[in-house]
Structure formats: structure tokens, C-alpha cells
Length: 205
Image 1: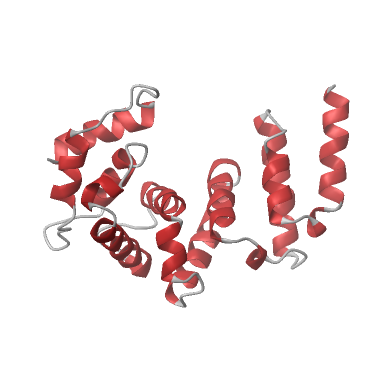
Image 2: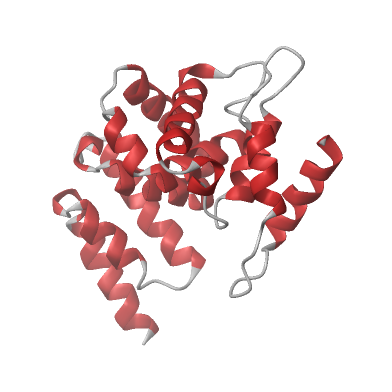
């Protein structure tokens, strides 16, 4: 079985420059071992560096998933993707409508870039302001803080508070804290990361 899986991965690597983004992401799910996933991501990184694969083929949701894979299996290249995403936001390559409609993907990207130190109170970047404005619009048009799901609230709130200082005060945080107070998710207990971030939120409050 291991030989079969290795041969499948080898076939995908040989034609990776021709793969559609959805095929790359879907086939990634077939590899359970971290070393195989890392090898697959590394193959795509190589194709990107050699200009054999155009990153613009990924839509926003697909790009968010790819960047999360890079953060997990090829972290040394994460700064390249941060600059690319930042450039896309600055040039409005992804319309505001797309960012709002794909807010969950936007939140995952934002949280990850804060966690990895690319966005902070000292270096907020255009990406920070774009995210906050998208969140503000979403809350204004979709019922206030209830527009933020319980699956998103802990990571989202932590990321916003982690990028706040005495100068950079985010007016959305008090409303999100009220949303956190209503937290209910019996079907899915808090993850270790959520528990850690929730503790840090409590300390900051």
C-alpha cells in the first residue's frame, strides 16, 4: 500500500504544473502522512519558483487553503505568500465583495499571519485594515457580532487583540467580547489552540 501511495504521489509530482488548484487541494486529502504532504507541497513550491505554475490560478478560498498548507509544511516560504496576499489586497486583485463573501477564508489567513508575526500593532499593514473594514461591513449588514460564527470567534478575537496597543484601539472588540460571552458549541469542544488563545484574551481583558 505504501508503494502504491508513493507511486500516486510521484505521478502527481510529474504533472504538477498541469494540475488544477482544486485537484491539487483535493488530492492532498488522500495523503495522511505528514512527510507525504510536505513532499507534495514542496513539489508545488518548486513549480512556482520555476514559473511552471501560476499562483493566480488559485481563487481566494483555494489560496487561503494553500497558504495554510505552506504554513504547516513549508514555513520557510510563508513570507513569500504573505507578500503575495498583501499585494493582492493592496491592488484589490480580490474584490471587496469576494473578501466579504469568503470571510471565513479571510479570517483564517488573517489569524495565521498574526500568529506567525507578519501582522502586529507595530506593523499593521494594509491587510490588517482591509480585514477590519470587511469585518465591520459584515457586522453592519448581517446582524452585528452574531455575523461571526462560534467557529471563528476565538481566533478572530485573539488576532484582533494581539494587534492592538494604546494607539491602535479597535472599536469592534467590545462587541466581539459580548459575542464570546454567548459562546456555545457543544458539538465541537475548544481545541488546544483555542483554549490557549482564550486564556490570553482573558489576560488582555
